[in-house]
Amino acid sequence: MIQIPRGTQDILPKDTYKWQYIEQRLHKIAQNYNYKEIRTPVFESTELFVRGVGGSTDIVNKEMYTFKDKGDRSMTLKPEGTAPVVRSYIENKMQHDVNQPVKVYYQAPMFRYERRQKGRYRQFVQFGIEAIGVEDPLIDVEVLSMLMHIYQSFGLKNLKLYINSIGDQNSRAAYNQALVDHFRPSIHEFCSDCQVRIDTNPMRILDCKKDRDHPLVQNAPVIYDYLNDESKAYFEEVKQNLDALGIPYEVDYNLVRGLDYYTHTAFELMSDAEGFGAITTLCGGGRYNGLLELLDGPSETGIGFALSIERLLLALEAEGLELPEPEGIDLYICTLDESASTAAGRLVHKLRTEGISCDMDYKHRKLKAQMKDADRKGASHTIVIGETELDSNEAELKNMTTGESKKISLGDVEEIRTIIEEK
Image (cartoon, rainbow, N blue to C red):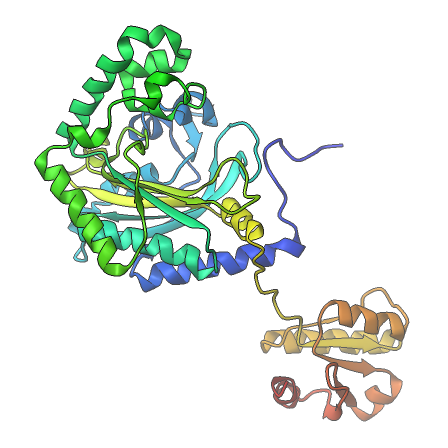
């Protein structure tokens, strides 16, 4: 039997309403902050991610789904959303748009070949936002406030926002050199990945899952000590504006987010809800001041975040929060014989085209079984059609909640609509 690929999932009809509810809310919140949707291809040139995400990252080295197309070009299924958005920004010359900064959001499947864990899949759905074209602490705070707004709007309480500054390029370079000096004498004690990272991206050593408890990691240099005055002033303004909005946060000087393009503000949102699992990160992001130039674009800067809908659902489950189930259909038509089924089919078609949700029996079941089916489908009203109703062109429209019935003309859609809307 052919089975689902490892690390993926089927989202069945009994659960899709949760996804739809979350997606609609995410879109609405983004639009309230004046972010517009952008849609990029599900696969891109492999070079985009090698250059944009960084050749030293696990994403590029270990997790990408890469293939050759029929033109012998290397393509990769999207492992993350920022690089494709930036590619589109550059290619479509969006720096010339009248509205600046360019504020966009996306929602799309992403693909990473990584070890299967609770709430983490090889195909997952990511929602993210990017604000490109302005470097200002206020836009950083807008992004952080939207992030908190999203999670709090679902009723989540066990949230902790951690922020840090990686500083500008000069500060980052100074810090990287300090890390090299710190780790180099004992780098042979670290995993093979870290032995490569010390020459490519030393900050990635601090993210290593294998060596996180190594004493040299525990007492590594703190990035704040290597920030220049401009970077410190930028970070202080971010914190002051968060305070002004009443958004709680904690500064974590070990939070460096190892992707090659991050500068200045970096952040992660965590859940400390009991039962959430070992991986508590809900969302992460930061500012990228060199990414556009790295991809041959203009000298512009951006900031954004990305969240996994799967992990959002896991957080809701951990806090015992239920999403509202959708209402059932407006009408279920029961039939007593074959001629009634034909007439019901015509009526169902007419009602659906007029915006009334309805269904009917297709298995030629007894009336009692049809009424049970109507109840399972959450029908607010029912109609029973038989020979008598066909001859008179009238039937009883029954309210399934109150039990009240009203006689209606089978061809009068507006009359049916009026009674249904009275519920």
